[in-house]
Structures are given as C-alpha cells and as structure tokens.
Length: 206
Image (cartoon, rainbow, N blue to C red; front, side, top):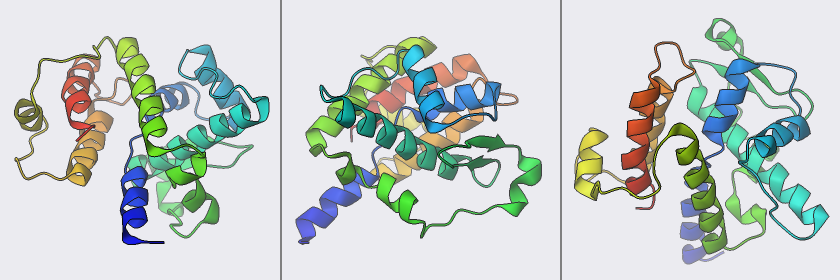
C-alpha cells in the first residue's frame, strides 16, 4: 500500500458517523435489550437510515457496517465515563458505576474492521455524501439548519479552539462538547447542544 492510500485510509478513519447521537438518544432511554437489527430498525423508524443499496444483501451489509462503525466510535467517545458493550446480539449502555471493569481492546479484529471506512465498499466521495445526508437529518431533528452563516474562524471560537487546530483536534473537541451538553445527559442542555451543531456543520468538512 502506497503513502497516498495510507493517507486516504487515515482520513476515512477520522470521518464522524452522525449516527452516534441518535444511537445515544436511544440507548439513554433504553440501555439494554438491543440487537444490531433491532437498533437498526429503531434508527430506520426515526428516519435516520433509508435504503442504501438496490441490492437487498448489500443494503443489509451497509446498514450493519454503518451501525457497527457508529457503535465503536460511540464506545470510544463515552469511555471512560460510561461503557458501551458491543455484541451483535446484546448491545448495552452501562453506567459509570460499573465502567472500571471494562476497557477498550484496540486490537479487536471487529473493531478494526468496522472503523476502516474502506470496508464499506464505497469510494470516499460516496461515504462523505452519505454522512452529510445523515448529518442534515439529525440537524433537522434537533432543530438546527444545514446551512449556517457562521464562518470558519467564528466556528473555531465557539469551539474554544485556536486557528492552528487540526481536524483531529476539532473532532475531539466536538465530541467533548457534544457529549457534555447532549440533552439526554445529566445536566445536559438541548439548546446549547443545538447551537454547537452549527459550528460543527462548518468545521466537520475541514
């Protein structure tokens, strides 16, 4: 694999999966009793996932991939404050009280597979288009807009970041702030979360 491909895969790994937040909404309200297909159906019922491929088999695969990718990203986002157990037939959100008994296995083959966007079987442009579509739907759900008059500099200020912030810095800060103010989190603030969605919509494509 040449250096250009390495860079491409690294960029794909950094892509934010917008299903993180709808999944967190669902798990906060019902922490256990979920399987991959039932969670996928719940997301479909809320309008977050529509048909992804005309082939039923490929459609099922892509739904599963997107969901598993989001779960692994969410697990990393929540840890170490909370724990997300990821098993195909037993997805469980676990409170902070029990987190000390768990840790993220960075060498887990499934985790490595589902966090590599190349395995979605689509080119980078198609993946970005798909995620942009998901993000627009979630913004409408929380009351935000898909177009913002906030410029890049103002967005960085709202994220409390300097002009030299990297894409990784931006993504890390977004998750930190979004998780802090998520409406379903204790002491969360729905309005603050909605406001944060605006600068993230500007910064996420940088």
